[in-house]
Image (cartoon, rainbow over all chains, first blue to last red; front, side, top):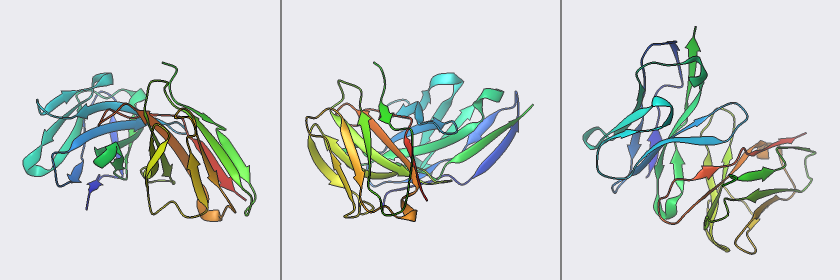
Length: 112
Length: 113
């Protein structure tokens, strides 16, 4: 069955520190992978996507993610976190007909 | 590109009442999706449309739920005889064909008293 696992429910980092959010997926074919961010009471904003090609993809707001087929992972990274990055982050895999299967989410808190 | 618009933003209703939500997708997008998100969880797929055709429905979409996209533009999601368990954020998204990224609205938060 198709699924996405985000092992970390909540992460706290200091402002200026680096960040890595983990995502593992289970999908039979070549996956289309996405990271979205959600602020409280808001919808989801696309950070980046992987369809094919270069396994390191760049997104908005200084985020990047690396697709590792051997590990079934698509971890999100940012070299230096800003206080405004505090939000909920969702990893998703695109299934047939384009519907998205989301992970449970990782809530990011940023310490000043 | 004015983005995906959802109305209302919040809906409070008594158990047993019917509610209807509206979604206006990005105008050139053929595909429209509905998701449900409960507290502390990721969004769960409910149904999707390719133009006016409803092509897939999740088993989460009980008989009390119905969705339409009559002219391939806006969509409505109706819940009949609401139950406590229907309390959630209902998100709409739209996209072009294939696995083009989905753009989400800000959602409708439903609270059942």
